[in-house]
Length: 175
Image (cartoon, rainbow, N blue to C red; front, side, top):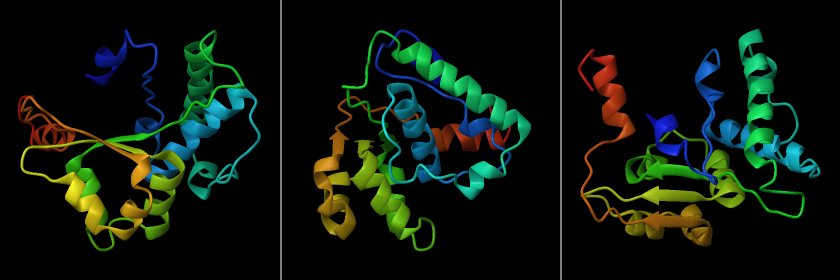
């Protein structure tokens, strides 16, 4: 579904790296992995988080093959569009429900939230009944980095969400 949505885009890119991992991978790790792949292509120096993450070290052979595939995809995607002087940044695109999950005790590591917002930034799609602006205001970490958070107002109601699609798939329902 996402692949079809972005196939004609010059500035959006889809990777299946996370989905082929042998288990759950922290969001921060996924963002760091992809930013590092872009930085390698652009010849930029290693940044914080560039060291090998234990989650990545235990990756399966399939995941390592996919890592090489991702690097090739990054090269194909950025070739002729970006060079070392460009600041190509990975950002977390999410719905307001995911943003609000930052407040669920024990669900997110505080350090991961800080790193995600500070180092990557967030593009949050509002959902009917949510108030992401208020949530950002009420959260000290998000308020501190609010310049790194873009909230996109959903003017046309769209009840499709990744959470609902995953639930339907898990239940064997038609999507």
